[in-house]
Length: 161
Image 1 (tube, helix red, strand yellow):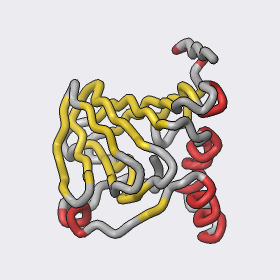
Image 2 (cartoon, helix red, strand yellow; image 1 turned 90 degrees about the vertical axis):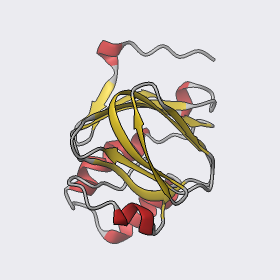
Image 3 (cartoon, one colour; image 1 turned 120 degrees about the vertical axis):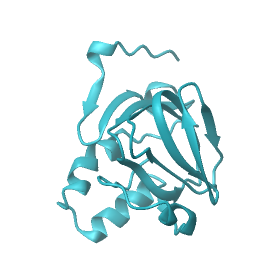
Image 4 (spheres, helix red, strand yellow; image 1 turned 45 degrees about the vertical axis):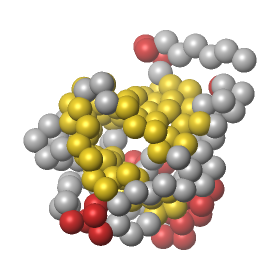
């Protein structure tokens, strides 16, 4: 199976600035891919794990703060991180820099419906029960992380990945 996504035809989601490039259904379940741009100091995702897939992050530009297990790292342009299933992680743009990321998910789990719901989640338009159901359905399981919390709060924190 092949999939071609032209830049001008890519579906976008605002808040966050997210380009939906390939979902599991597009790739025969091989992978999913998206591009995410974060304003300076903006959180991309709070600490969470995925049980069904790995997630890889390539920093196209800017500076990314990222929790991997219980260690917070700072990554810059050209850095690449792969997070295995079951490993807690979180990420956000550094306080003084934006971050532009290319993210892949393997195997390809269909998460486009989840990403389309993010603006409603962030706006507080869904009930706690709906949010819990959505996170379970899309394999996003939030965890506590003292290491991530100790680095300080960032505006625009969202529960996504």
